[in-house]
Length: 128
Image (cartoon, rainbow, N blue to C red):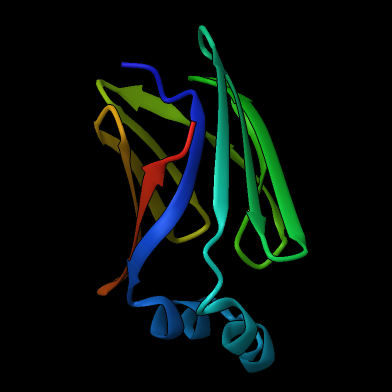
């Protein structure tokens, strides 16, 4: 199953608490909590380009599975990390945040971010 395509955020759980914990300012949390972000994934073998558009903010991360890359975090910080692929899941750790992106079926992308006991879950549906 290919990750490639565009996905729009359908629902999310734990956004406000998680963003506070990672240090995002309250005004950005307030602005971002109701925006239905769009994630576009380009997949070419083990090379990925992930573009997340949230309102006016665009975050682009490019990486090769199993190789160190510079990944932009939720707070805009650039962190060196390795993304691994396990079946239909992409996994990485950015500082203390564990990110698992799972292609549940051909049309549903679930991204789960974990920081200690806090969990932020995003469910997106394929647009194209």
